[in-house]
Length: 91
Image (tube, rainbow, N blue to C red; front, side):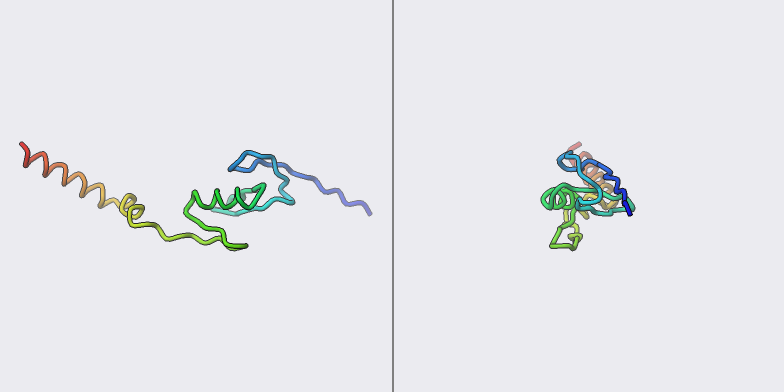
C-alpha cells in the first residue's frame, strides 16, 4: 500500500523562511494557523502580540498600565480636556 503525503509549503511570518506545514511548529490564533521554522521565531511572533511561550503552552501576559490607558477611550477624552483647560488658562 502506497501513501502519498503532499508537503505543503508556507512561509514563516517572522523570518520569511519556507516551512513544511506537516513538520513545522504551528500556532492557531483567532482561527488562523501560523507556521514557524523554529522555537525562537514562534517566541518572537508571540512576544510581539503580548504572549509568552513556555514549553508547549502559550500564556497571554496582562496588559501594562500604559497599554490599558492608551486603549481606554476616556484617556483621549481626558487628554483633550486637559489641553483645552491649559489653552483657556494661558489665554
